[in-house]
Amino acid sequence: MLAACLSATAFSVGAVDTVRLKDNAAISGRILAEKRDAVVVDVGYTVLVIPRPNIAEIVKGESGDAKPGRASRKRASENPLAVPDTAPAPAPSPAATSNPPAAVPFADGFYRVAARSASARDVRELVAELGEAVVQVRTPASLGSGFFINEDGYLITNFHVIEGETQISVEVYLQRGGQLERKTYKQVRIVALNKFADLALLKVEDAGAPRFKSVVFGSADAMAVGERVFAIGSPLGLERTVTEGILSTKTRPMQGVLYLQTTAQINPGNSGGPLFNLHGEVVGVTNMKIAFGEGLGFAIPSESVRYFLDHRDAFAYSNDNPSNPYRYLEPPGRTRQPTPTE
Image (cartoon, rainbow, N blue to C red; front, top):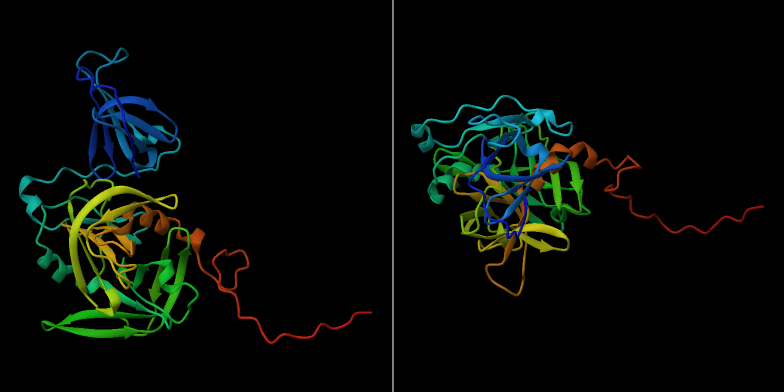
């Protein structure tokens, strides 16, 4: 996630550097420092600290060690901590921006990210397109929301939705002949848990389960405060409820963690559901609200969700693994009298 801090440094027009990101975005400004794990760029009104793994290429403007009129380029692969990347995709033609956003598999193909963003679309159109990917997650003690990240039945929800439970069911709403068909799947396995990030990865394993409609991840970092967002979930059990609002802030600290704050209504039952931008990309996972206020909802940024998915092996759930910090212990048996020893 890009970290920003206030800066009184004026923007220098004489030498403009460009940092190209792996999502085909670019940041122009003056590079103040190049560290092993990050690059610091002055963009005039603020200073951005860009993590090395997000950088595809650095293009420096004219400097004392470069020939006049020629920019010096540095690939991200020159840094030992950078993540290898493929060649950048060609820029889309102007006509292509009217199409839905393209999506490409990320890392091992476990989920998809938007390769480019199309123009903003109508919420009604997006809900009709994405509604099948949003599900209701039920346990004997709680109810929440979730969404499929791939066609194989893997889905994301909040840790607190399934905390302490292993009997989990997922309700999917499929479009059949213009009508919604409710389907309940009860063979749901816990794949990975991260209590501190409030995230859980589940998998539907019912026999005969179809290929599921899935979502595409976008970038919360790339959004601007004030952009419109919408959430789909099951507040108070009212499935497929859509609420719309704006992104109030991207860096609201809550108990040492940064969350997205939104005016989209978030209520009990929305937990674990997706927060979309108007390109139809998931930019957050809704997980809490301030109970005594209105329009004060919060979501986990998509970058944090992707980090959890990329490192899911580290958070793998196994009740038989004594080294797993998130295992569910067996309930205590009947108290036994201690046996005297010789």
